[in-house]
Length: 162
Image (cartoon, rainbow, N blue to C red; front, side, top):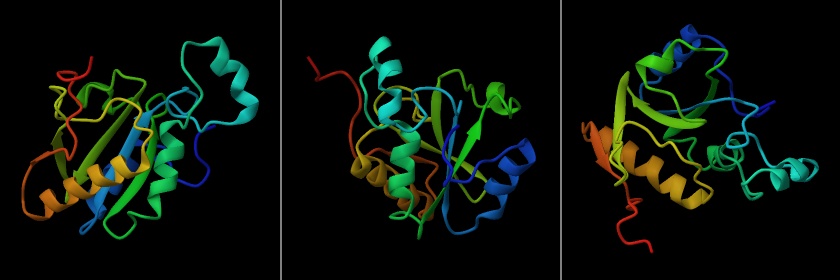
């Protein structure tokens, strides 16, 4: 299933080429399973599967990525990679979550401090399009300045949430 519009990377070679070939834009790769509820786009016909699970219906990450792709196309390119089809990166990037977004710039893995303790990746569904655009833009600006670690515009720690 997955997204029809966002480009899929079907092999490890394609993932490497996507990361290596982009010189001026941030490469955003969603690693996950195309059939997973955290990745797949929401569709009214799938409401039964959402009601039977513990999750609420809402935009899945692929749909949010699709909606922001056009707004970030000048400084970022977004790809999807199914970790069942391309298992080569599971251990290297510790891809154990249902959905993970990673960022690369000029063949370098970009880290972002979200306040969660894991600076390597974004591993939860981010349904707010503007928040995702802000994160991508912050990482891009930091990467252009030569920084390997960028602080997220919003703190996602659970410290002040009750």
